[in-house]
Length: 233
Image (cartoon, rainbow, N blue to C red):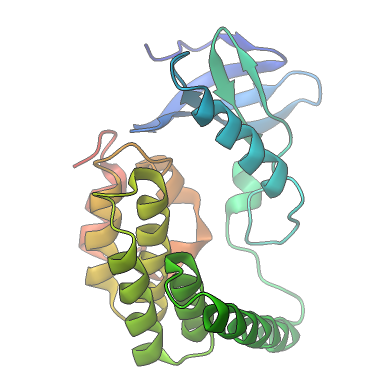
């Protein structure tokens, strides 16, 4: 059941709903201790699925170590009444302009080249690893090598389809959507995102509205329709 405005989750007070998807709901909330606006994602995890809670905790710990202008800052996570919620700041998810964009782009290419080399080496040891194929494709997309990027991304998804691996298959498709977007294939990216909104996965229309990854799609009519929906299409 959706949370009503005024509901308290620890120190966070719900202000309004932002959106919902297969994995839970996202709310605008107020951090009453620090008097700031945050986004709270409430993840539904039935008691019969403890592995989902464990994955939630593992991902929250990993995300909390990241610090980047284009990545949401994770302030906190926890459980209340059987619900799991990680508060993040919407303002931290919006586009920021670096004071030295040229340096930022140079660093991004250097990081992508390191990732490409690492993924290549790992694939040599495990040529059937679906995730390594997709991550290599993503690194190639950052480097502007579009054709190669799509080939590796699509091969990774084919190696581990959602029909056989529900969660990891969805994660791989999410990364493939990022590859399509960076490779200049907006319609394929949107088609992939639309499919992910129909299944149990953490993406929601609200998340897509604030994620800077999809900035170049903001004016695309199909993407606008996708993010206006409060329910999966």
